Image (cartoon, rainbow, N blue to C red):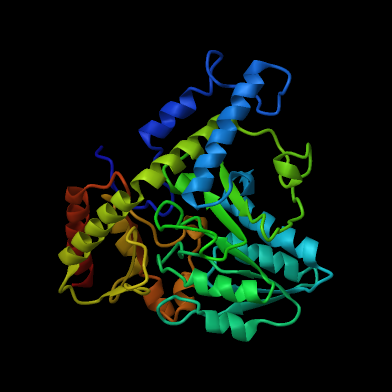
Length: 382
């Protein structure tokens, strides 16, 4: 059976072969398999050196200091550590947190949890293009606001938020600013200093690295403190305990190293694919692009299809590997809360599909996928 055309890079990416090669070298007895915390012998020292080299690669990707990178199991844990960690540290200063209604569930659920602990959460409504403005954040700020958490690139619609403006506002008001960058790291140029970011979440599997490893950037100047959420051995400067998985971290580091070198190449490739995909669909009545085209990652397209049943459309596209939204919500039969959040009618939102392009997508595949989509949609619509 022929494998479907994979256009779900926003859900996960295949590991780059160059990354896999480095990881394999950290698994077996004759490789760099040691525990980085074993400081009494050379095998531990070598593992520690590999981990620190990877830390430097990840830091360079976002223009940070390596000492500002804290290893986690992924962006979900990073979001939890940032939001709950700030809330715990700053609870006496204030108990108000600002986020948006279309954040990733890792952010929204963390905020909802804090609401049960006496924190007040303001969830901003995006405009019809899917963006949150600095003006909205400014209007929501209060004297007891301790944290703002706004994602860089939305995981469902690919829209890019004005992070630098929001960050500058937070810095002026001495409010910690957290950014979920799971969908922007390695896809959009990131300079945490220029963007005024205090805390930033990244996941390796969104950028051709392995699953199960991520990082949280925690600013050192001015210093941001977060309370640990996992306790054990005081690893990662006391912010995240647990034995470091050398092979996963090395893979993450190699993925970040490649992404730094090939960012513009990857973006240009994805943009060409996005444009080719849309060109094949041009003139087909009933297809709607969700979210801003001007402020959008070239890796992502979210489309709605009027006049058809969404489930029937998705089931008929068995030659394509695409999603009906976030992979974290794929089992839900409700319309996407992100699309509803930007004003898409529920009935139309139920027909939405996310097409995401990546490093290993080819022009021929994307054109074929668009032609299949067009044929299936027009057939269902009648």
